[in-house]
Image (tube, rainbow, N blue to C red):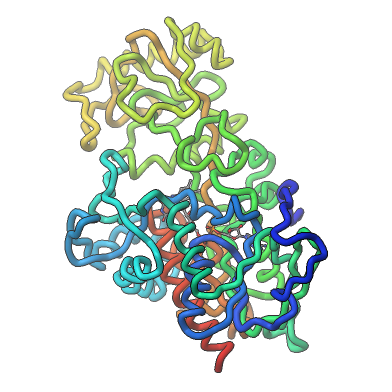
Length: 489
Ligand SMILES: Cc1cc2nc3c(=O)[nH]c(=O)nc-3n(C[C@H](O)[C@H](O)[C@H](O)COP(=O)(O)OP(=O)(O)OC[C@H]3O[C@@H](n4cnc5c(N)ncnc54)[C@H](O)[C@@H]3O)c2cc1C
């Protein structure tokens, strides 16, 4: 497996060959990563009295991993306040978690995450986070999820400022490339770090791995998905290539989470290979139909409440020829959803639109005619996105179970879509103290993990919006505290 997905541009944080005391001193805790889980770990370890070095592989301008693309966090709470519109009891959060994929991988760790989530917002605010009320139309999360003022980038920036004030040493362009193990192979003694000035060695009493998943490593994805993976776009940075996950698994860490599992949504096929973030997502699907490269529909485009279903479409597209699909709609609904970031293709007839999208005009026209006839056979009724409206097709496979209306009003619109991979599920197993578990029983001594790299302990498959940041924050707090305790014992 190639460990590096593409060349990562190097920008020197310190001039080449300049002496840098960060590498010479032994640290209580070295945190690998520069996103939410890493920052929370570093802050938590520092609060517990440890001297902490944080290694962020990205240059400073791109610091923050997937976390800088986020908007909100899901925590249990007892009542409404200025930022959430009502209570969200632990039991309801647990039910929501049970309802995604095949439910939690480890029930006890899931319950611990939920219980700990209650104190997360106050902890975050005490470390620099600020909130804003949910924007209208943001997936109906106003009661359950708390939104970051200015989004994930602002949150990450606040944490870096708090970290600087707390005396945490941060090195950018610092890629943890290898781990040195003690003679008995049971704990890490030092890390080898690739920097613009060459490879450095840094000694650590405890290590927190908070380096995200492996979604940016196309070769690794291709192990499970074959060449289809070459057509995937990655919504977050190129830096999450799983180098540290790979090192830990090779060192005998227990494996958790589905190897093939990822969270993926339908994004504009014209998006960049990496880091398109939230703006490239397409929300038009329930308003029209989706066809593949052959101009045929292939999945129920109106299956369930749209926010519950939007994450199905990444996988749906991944299974289509060429990993591409095309969202089509007409003038009637145009403007009812967030406009596509790069604009839509537009044609006065379906045939013209099909030509612009590189599709067979006859096939697309036939598909829309068959679809319209199936809408006519359906029960009709009021079209509303407030819930499942029961406006379904009749006598067509696949059906459209809700929001089915004729596509008949020119101009017609279309956008090409590809799978946009958000993150992967495969990670390392941990104990309730965030210690990385060993495959053969016991733990990897002084190695702790937080965030996406261990989210497979909580989520088996499927995803609950806002819970990635919950996992990172809850487990960052535990990992940082326990790593500090280990180092200072
Ligand atoms: C577009 C988008 C929107 C999202 N929106 C939300 C949302 O609103 N709410 C939510 O809860 N979740 C959301 N998520 C998911 C969320 O981003 C993740 O669950 C969460 O950020 C994971 O945090 P993390 O710290 O584990 O990983 P990351 O934030 O990805 O951080 C990993 C860090 O490790 C660094 N790194 C990687 N390898 C190395 C190495 N070898 N050496 C040193 N550093 C390394 C990376 O540079 C990066 O800084 C979203 C994801 C995307 C892509």
